[in-house]
Image (cartoon, rainbow, N blue to C red; front, side, top):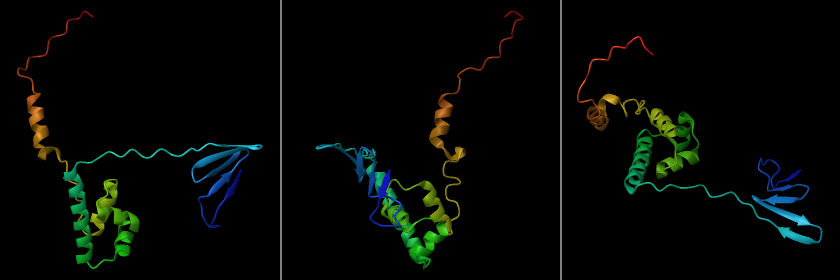
Length: 153
């Protein structure tokens, strides 16, 4: 198998040439003697789940607030990204409010901004009012003494 690349230092080949044909930009093309058969394979598009508009607005507001906090601290994007251990394109997606941005990236940026660890008490069990109400609804109405087991199986 032979790899053909436009740039010598590139890790990603532009085309892969094999015995039965070649693949170019995720499309596989086969050549059979004089007849040419073109078979195209491409990766399926990733499935995107819509998010509620309220959550989308919240993510955009969080990104805007992170960017304002960075500017208040007089940090460049490069300096903040280095401190947080993320890339500049990831930071740009975060500031734009992209829903696919990982929670770990947000945690690292908030920590690098000196905000500590904001997720510590986020889902604390004692503050989960809805969960506590649901738990109360499931409590038994009567509590009985456990039955004595007889010696028979």
